[in-house]
Length: 227
Image (cartoon, rainbow, N blue to C red; front, side, top):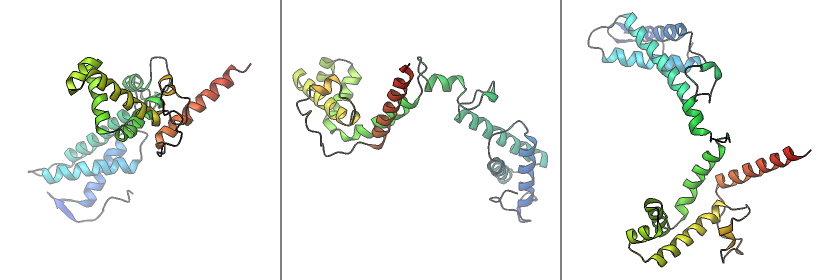
């Protein structure tokens, strides 16, 4: 029995009761023997919802078989959506989550490295970006859009020298959080404010996760090189 679904002789529409909707949904999901890997109650609830909608929207009384097909299609579509969400190869679902071609192409680099860096770096970027000033973001966006310093400086209406100064400042501000706790990059090493360790800002959560992940990979690499 699915605890979250009502069961009674209460009439809904076209002669069907809540008990009828429940029975149709359960039978449809039970007959979809090819569907695996998700809580049965969730699939029944999905099928029940679609049957209820179809029943209430029907102008003429639908047959029980028609409602059964609605429930079956709902369960099947839910199964397809779940597989897509988990990156399952629909041509060979037995390979499990992450086996799909498009999933592999998106989450794995050509060198075979894991997708963790892509996820962490993307979210960390979203956390650090708002800490920059509006002017700094404007300069970096102009440079990214126009691809060259002279074109970008002309677009924002400042001199080339003024623009490069702003970009340099924006990069240093960005790297201040991006490389928090890590070995400074070459650009970071030339920062005249490099000695100021206490910046008044705490590193974001994902920056700390990124740092720990890299440290773990370095440690694993050193262990792999040990004869």
